[in-house]
Image (cartoon, rainbow, N blue to C red; front, side, top):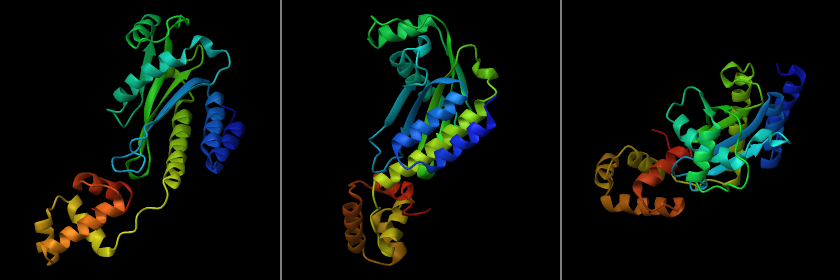
Length: 245
């Protein structure tokens, strides 16, 4: 089992981190205590977020010897498992990668075959993590030699640490994105109706203003948000907390 004192100190450090580098370094120290040898993380910003196109990914070996693990092979395998794991947002999914599967995956992705492929079965687990405003993600971890993913006593600690790291990373990213655009009360009102699926004409009737006035407000909203279509601007308003339904 994880040494309780070390774990508590590491978790306190996780909450106090202020930069990406400190965050990952602290998380890795926790995962090492839990006998994790490799970790992969995918951060998935919500549609409409400033950094939506920046699909952040990280795969790191935590064990100096590599333990017969090739990060390039595992990254490709994680890609597949993270998509698979994303279908079930309520639980973790156990998986195993055989040497034959690793070699086939490497050949399919044209990965450097000169490096040695895994010579043994690699076991791991993939689980989702959730953040504010629809900022979700997934972690995949490989456990150390001789540890079965399904029988790992530290699994809940691993999940908890990764969830907290994800929440912290979300905050760091949101702070990096800068301040949100300032919408007037009327612009918020109109954008809320857009998010509810109402056309400009219907919004004009509801608010008892002219369609021309609604069109003017919509142009201002598009300009402030840096977005030019109704669906994306509505999602951006919701996911960035500018409006509520």
